Length: 290
Length: 338
Image (cartoon, rainbow over all chains, first blue to last red; front, top):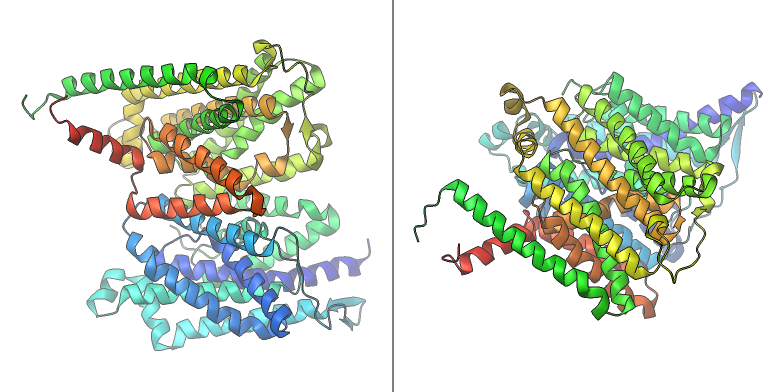
């Protein structure tokens, strides 16, 4: 096989991986601060995809244009979920929280199934088949490039928010020392709700972006949940940069598996990677020892 | 009668009452096929099947505290092993069940060794179970020997005459088969809860470090829980294969099915003896009713929507499940009866 084929696959994988990374960042933020594992992750992402689909069909907004709208809607959803349900259940055993969110995911999946039906649906943007030709036989799809760049911009914005704004610092304070944060008068419950909202907005934005690359159907949800878990575990649960790095690795490994073996086997490679990481370095590439 | 009771007395009395309740339940269930119509019978078969899976899952999580969200894997392994043996080599389910239990237990042991030897716990262990089940789902989708995506089918013949050894026959026969297996599993669980092993499991569930400090071989008993749970789940899988006669990897290995297995015990009461049974008795008929009522509107997903909302409500308002609450009600109503 020519070298260009590999290069193209790797570049495509990197760009898709950046979108995965943005979505995994949402999972990572929620876990890192609230210490809740969001088992409804893929469902939120699919919800974002369907919102973008509706905005495209009804208002003619392209997926990239609808990112802010979808992010705001998902933010409200995440905020309400944390403020209304999860905040009350911070004291129940961990597994009950997993199951609660898995059940929330089930509700979202069946709701999308009832509203949109089981068939795969997609969005065609005007530049869907355009690509940039680079020297050396490299072809980069326009949609993939835009998707990757948009994801990086959003991820960087989020990291800057956590680093420099007052609210971002307060949220990090809650994550570092819950009791200490309460002692200095932070409203931890409100900040948790805010965090879940921000995480959900991140996931929704990623969903909106990825709609340019894949068709949406309700059963995509469990696949995306698992991919995001694989990514954050490879990168290190709770580490934002780890999420992006893991996203890149999984994106590239999927692209190469699709090229070398068979596209439908690509998820098996991610799971192989996951099992390997759990055994060799369970805290992930950039994670702290638990 | 004094409110202060010696624990031994209380245990014995509650045991007697539980045995009485079980005998009554078995009697009702045993005559059911003569009373109800064939539709209700299929619902009852489904109830018993889900109860068996719930009981098996409950051993691992409810008793020993190891949460698996990939238990569909072991149903699928049991079903595919016995079905493949029947289709390719012509051996019946009796032989197939032995092979199925061996295969499922071996895979369960592998998950257990990886998880417990490398101290993968909490959410990481859950993900390990999900990852294994997804891995096998995709693998079976690509194995032509097992039918791949197209599914594996058992030949359907002579439904009129019952042949228990080959598991071919009427719904009544299937009903009694699954009733027997679920009953035996319930009895096994009851015995386990009262055994030394059961108390070790509870110790591990409540505080693994303290259990270890007391000299409980945590690794060994966790492994026992996983292997027993997966073996029983595989038996359920064998029943699934011969009752439904068709197997599709995307159905039987799906994460959705794994979650459905956990619902009955969670709604009924995790870690309790009767929780899985109560949960299956409530959820399966409700699911069937919802499917039947909404069939005319052709809306997919209503059953899952309802199940999801139920679980959210149960976790919010009755996190211990229905059975402990029901048991408390029954006891407080007649405090002098025991």
